[in-house]
Length: 250
Image 1 (cartoon, rainbow, N blue to C red):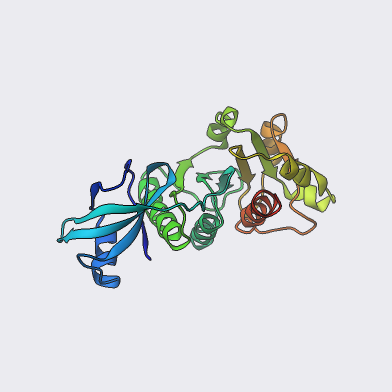
Image 2: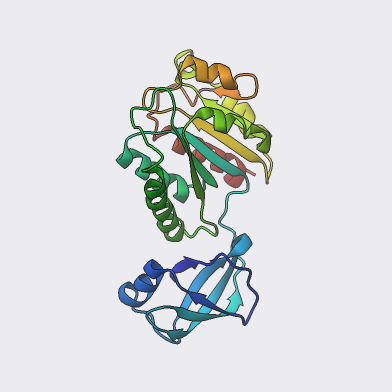
């Protein structure tokens, strides 16, 4: 059954309106649903309901909640991926796959070695496209929440947010080159449900020494295994390891 999202509080036998144009097109033209058909909608706070379509027109689809579903597809820990800007197709692939794998939020950051540049005029349009990719990936993977994405023009803005997280991890390729493999594993063993993790990943050229020094007093500088991973691959490796440790091994 197809999944959609509404950022509203819900109870049984309430009526709601789907007004997102893309959702209306998908429901009526792609899935060809009509009055009396059922959908699954994820509401605010990851509350999921089966709903029945009660009315359809070009401006809105009216639905009524008919059954609350006891499903839990969100990762027990909240992982925010703050990554340096990389080439557009690679970053969009990262957003799609990391959403499927459970990332809670994304932060795109202009870093010292970022080849890709994003100015203030282009940022809103990019964020709109990125958010659409994330939403579609969340629907496809039966997520109950849509991750958010923000853009910052300097890593300092991310540094100012670190007090919001329980763990700060900086995936640094020099650690992998030097054979460091224990710190990431140690962190995984400490994770508890509802912990907030900030994962910092550099762009194609990696972090500069200045960026590492900026965070080293507050972050765990970790290697992600013995091999050097691409900028778009490293977050997926980390998400897989976190999911395995906290969702499958406990």
